[in-house]
Amino acid sequence: MSKKIILSGIQSTGNLTLGNYLGAINNWTKMQEDYDCHFMIANLHTLTIRNDPETLRQNTLNLLALYIASGINPEKSNIFIQSQVASHAELAWVLNCYTYMGELSRMTQFKDKSAKHADNINSGLFTYPVLMAADILLYQADLVPVGEDQKQHLEITRDIAERFNKIYGQTFKIPEPYVQGVAARVMGLQDPTSKMSKSSTLENDSILLNDEPEVILKKFKKSVTDSENIVRYDKENKPGISNLITIYSAITGKTKENIEKEFEGKGYGDFKTAVANCVIEELKPIQEKYKELKENPDYLEKIFRRGAERAYTIAHKTLEDVYKKIGMVWF
Image (cartoon, rainbow, N blue to C red; front, side, top):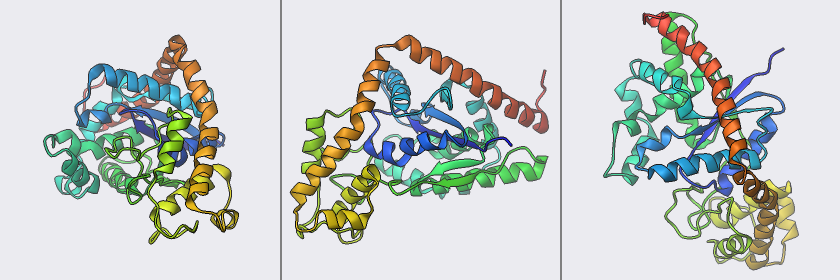
């Protein structure tokens, strides 16, 4: 019996955060044991904002190294760079012609990003979900890991696929969401009501995977909590301390109830230090492996070339089927 297919990816817009690691990559390492996994570096998606070309190139290669350093095994999973598989852009254009303006205008992420980038509301930002749909449908993915903020994108992907299948017959597999675990949504340390983000403009808001131990400790010590000074999980009334409990739970495997008992009678200072220390220890082997990989660019090139070849073989087959069905002259 063949394994179910999973497709996921992260934009190459900078260093990964602790949220990316706990909410995505750490779960990916477990998935690769049971699923046929394709993990993409989504550099085409970064073009909705203006990037320095050399920085984007370096961020892409850094992300490749971080994937591997974090436990994604290129012998078990296919790791590839999105722009190296032209089928993504080709299928996105076709699917644009089967997606309605009204559907795209209702996407909350478009509204959010438009507010943040009011000086650059480009058509790519508007049609972003169609490229994401092409990413997923090219590989006939059974499952797509999604957080709360990505559910709408998967829904429109399913709608596009069902619409196309209804017109031309069975072409695309209809993907299902793969709901992730306890730390699927790590929040910012300075704004615990918003998801921890690489693009946060708040100082000390995000823990980056390459942060030095003293930087990690400082950021946690400065994290926003409340005046109660009791380690208790209450997401609505105590979002800051609840976020720290979520992080500590995800790394240690302890339940929220056990964490509350462990720090009963202790203040926030002790708890923040404990969370920082467990994060530092968790990231230490990742940082060491990352430095080792960055010193071996030939190995990284071997991985992304092999990944592109594997991805192309699968994606091109789907694209060929699509082109033939819609009437493109094929050879």
